[in-house]
Image (cartoon, rainbow, N blue to C red; front, side, top):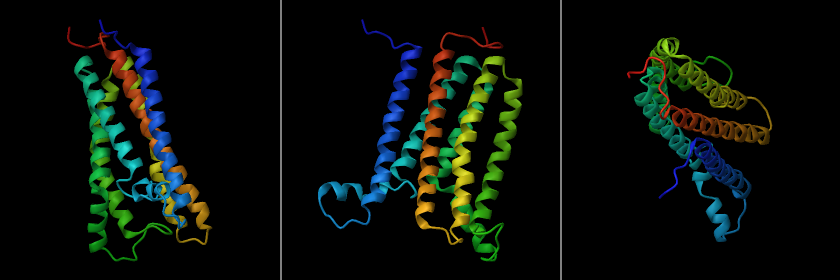
Length: 239
């Protein structure tokens, strides 16, 4: 008879798996920048010169890895909602799905370009920030406000366990946002300042690595939440 993997084991296996995946794609990103200026044409160098390893590019291996991890987390949280009937998990699944759809389909970039087309190109909200950035911020305001209000209502109505799980996801999202938003804006702003390009390159690497590790944390937290929800009814769940 096949042995069933238990809660601590599945968490450990997931943690090992995502750390290995993160290490591989982040290592390939570093190697890409190390060999991008080399003239060798052997297979190893050509393999590492693949543009998909560059984490600063759209739909890079790092971005796709993040999409997959957030998508898996959203599915797990939907499963937890079905088990517990706590709507806050469904709200979190919707938030993660919105993040994946926006980034993979470049919805905020499309909105930014549309705003740029109707505004004066010189319009800015700070040094180094483009008109397109204003449109991207407007897009996220329109998406984040309704989702945030929904989450807040369901978070306040959640039972103790679900509320604790929700706070853990808030911390993980805040970690991702620190790198995805704050460091990204800082990198753009420094682009118009006479700063060594090597420093900006290191900042981009830190931003990329922080985002990916944060997404991995979200997946791991979701695995813990879903594993604990099996056979453990929450308060308010239909009997």
